[in-house]
Image (cartoon, rainbow, N blue to C red; front, side, top):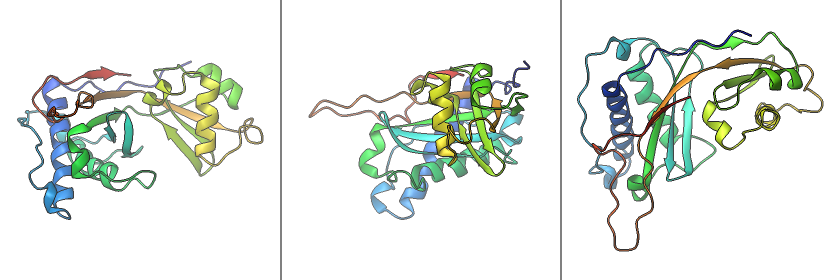
Length: 225
């Protein structure tokens, strides 16, 4: 079976810049409503010379408070500009994910950002839950699954919580409002690969110990799915 195309890898400098840009955009959006957010640190990064920053891209941005999800929002359709997409979805994920509570200044130093740049989705030829479970690659594939307009998506990072294909796909069906029992034989799926990179996860500080914020110039933890 054909493998979904992999997005062209970004340089370390571009990754670092986009993570800085995401944190700065979220800080500025928070500060527009909350004066306590105006002085939140965002670190320093230089904008590299990279044509990819101005090219179309499919992007998701997520924020975590250590391991707790603050928000994750993005688009399966290419945004006209990678840099602008990161800014847009950094703010949306941090403040407007309806599933979670928005970011607050008190959480800032514990939060870590993560960006996923998606490759082009590939339609699987097989139909049905069991056949799709055989076709997908755990840990590698992002999956768009559904029937007609009832669609839902999981990024590859969700395999961390749901490593078994059947569990992964059943949860994705429920997210789309579909029943694995009643709709399982009719579902179709597309798969995609991502380049995912993020800030270091900040461990909770001991009482009386200062916590360094995740937007500093420390070497970033980077990984690809």
